[in-house]
Image 1 (tube, rainbow, N blue to C red):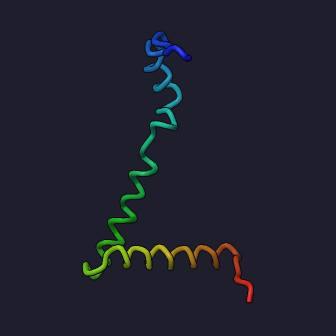
Image 2: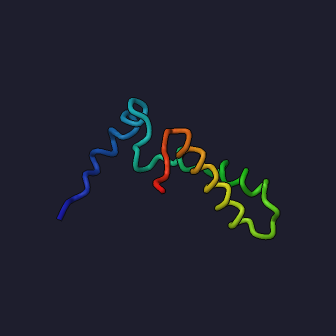
Length: 74
């Protein structure tokens, strides 16, 4: 059984100032992805937004695959 180390909390503010937020608690990367979802909903017909979003992501993935030199086997 591991015992929590409360002494670590004393040093936590200094560590955050020095190294930034802990990676497992950082949400900026995921919050910035909300912008992509919002844009896909703006360009939607509002009747089937999930379908439109899936089509947009599929198209973007195809473009990324081709742009990075990918190809499909026949």
